[in-house]
Length: 317
Figure 1 (tube, rainbow, N blue to C red):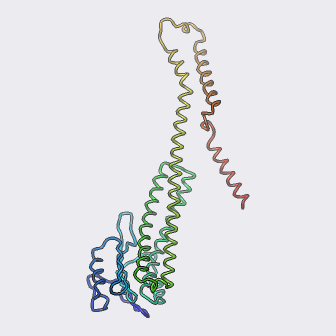
Figure 2 (cartoon, helix red, strand yellow):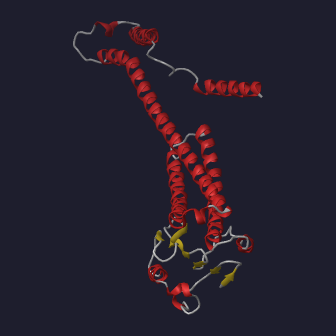
Figure 3 (tube, rainbow, N blue to C red):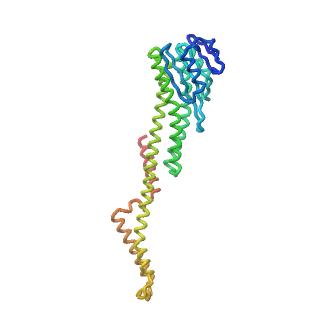
């Protein structure tokens, strides 16, 4: 499909198998021919800057990728007067609105950046959905810190890396356009507007990267703290009951001469000795401060902390 504007033309949805080279002189150029041949077999991001004949930018861009590693590409070749692309589609694209914006563009490069802005809209919608998942995970991490939290964090981290990988090539295209067209093509409104949108998208991605790294660090600290609490609890329990176990083992020995066998209150004496010993060891541990917070009510402390936090925030408001 061919769209003709005031100073430039957009060849949209070009079928590589049926390119009519007599349609436009651009198709005869060596750089365009090389791009057409390479695009038929390209399956990854490619960018080429042409400066020998006339300034041009060509390549392939992965604009959508699923979890099953199924990726969708669109190929492009752009000069100041011509823009060539193959068929591509994203669910957030409003093609009629995009063409209306292209009508105000003085060059094909400007129109190309209108198209890139539509792709960035798709990425921003995906990042908004990612933000919703991230906020829900942060809430679950605070209120229900289960074993699956770390797995979910790493899942979101991989998803964010995917959005970063989809956005970074667009940043590379912008820099390639600056290299090819210099100031003649980079001082226009749509180029600057799309550049700001690229910065906004990358800024969001970097912000969420920091959030995820912080969440991973907190989860690792909390896991280490839980492990320390478990080891501390086991140590205290072992120390408390070791004297009783020793008395019980001595009491259970079967020697020939055991005077306590004739004691009327032998069981009572033995139990009292065990209880007193355990109480003495516990008192000694408390005096040393080695029990820490093991025997305190953590849930009550947590509730009090949350209430005090809420009261503080209400006071500030």
